[in-house]
Amino acid sequence: MQRVSMIVYATIACGAVLAGGAPVYAAAGNNNTAQAELQLTIKDGCFLRFDNDQNTFSFAPFVFLPRPIEQQGSFSIICNAASFGNKDITVSLDGGSANPADRPMNRALYKDGDLQQRLLFQVYKETSGESNVWGDNSDGATPYTVSLDASGAAKNKPFIVQLPQQSLDNLTEGTYANVLTVTVNFESAGGE
Image 1 (cartoon, one colour):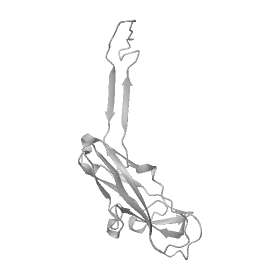
Image 2 (cartoon, one colour):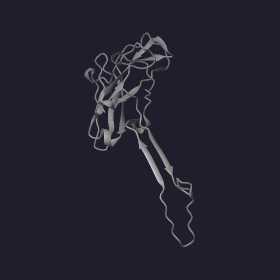
Image 3 (cartoon, one colour):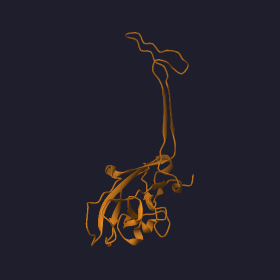
Image 4 (cartoon, one colour):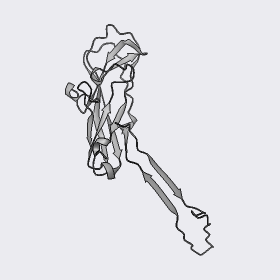
């Protein structure tokens, strides 16, 4: 698996001096032309972005959680069209960085890193439901399979962040958080 990356290097050489060091001059009323060297290196890869710059999900304060609370988000991917156009890639989501023991099917938010202060949450692909947990092929949670169009793009792929119904009796007041890592596996698109 590889992290989201698309690297484009562009080297443009033009202007008053050409590659051989010879200057280009144009007198008034005359047109002088010369060739300029233009080089662009395109690397295989993909770029993922959360639509509307929505990579942070913040729920309004609450004092009890008698039913699930959900927020919707979406992401878009742009890949090198020559390598990835009309192919499928996978996008994985880990269990979070707050507690290395957490897995996608067992995600939680923690208060100030205190592993005893644990508020459950889940992320789903497209629709909520246990069979649709967005993960990394561990413990039943599967990556998001994304079909790219001919231009190597997929836009507005929906997902849901959910706080399920749960007891808050043993949790203290405060802010609970976690950070998840999204990984785009573009090697799965063709094995090249």
